[in-house]
Length: 96
Image (cartoon, rainbow, N blue to C red):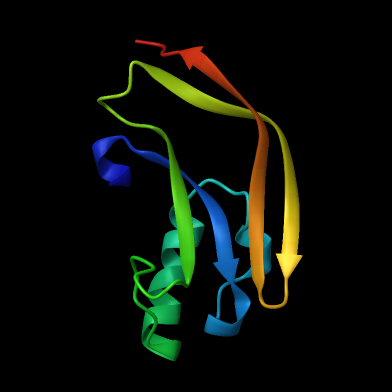
């Protein structure tokens, strides 16, 4: 999806499944993709987060007319799960 122009934000992680708590609220980049591949091999996680290892929000993609910019947020932890709560999103015009 990243190769197709998608920008995705990690909005939930479950550290009991091996997810790095520092990834919460970060945009998926090559470092996160490498970590997911390592966890797939080491802990047998599902690389697309099918079992709740993590969840994402698409900030931008080719079919969006505008991109989402997060201007205010909060991180909440409940036991082993972390949530990135978006308090104030802002729609921005796309740079073409």
